[in-house]
Image (cartoon, rainbow, N blue to C red; front, side, top):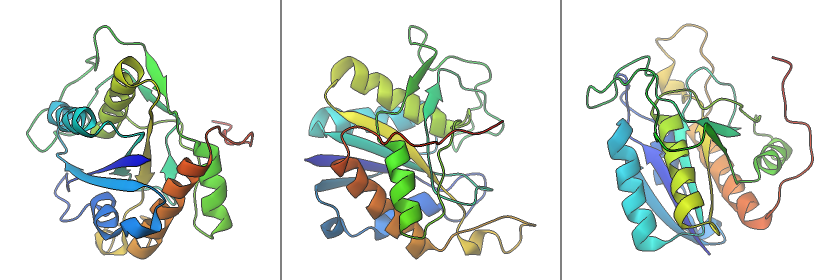
Length: 213
């Protein structure tokens, strides 16, 4: 089995991106599959272009994109990506699409094909805060998740894919007020657990993962 795991470069004037730092630190020998790591630009169209090229070259069984979600308390597998770019800030190339479809001929949304509830269950069992997220936002993270699932659905239907957000690490919140963070080692350990859970579970667990609002 082959897994492609991607992570974004720092953005929005941050010096680090915990997603990238955790993926770099991740020990491939702890994952029960061949692991391909890929750094991607925090740029709308360039990110999916780079990932698509690697998917075509490597044809992985699983594609997992990792991104930063500042303000979240835990690791959050994403349930759905919507066909919309609506950028609150500019990406690293100065692009700021507003109310633009990601794929003009694409469906309104794609659901993750990863076992997101099993991931949350296993993370919590290991003492790592985690929950299902029902919105990947409308920035580059959502753009990449939608793009990955569009590619897999149309060209590699036997492969699975999705997106996982991780919190800030402590060094990022020193000058921020009331922002949660998670130790980099815990994020990295959580990604190992998540990847091995994805390998183990072909179908998701039937657990509550929704929210009231």
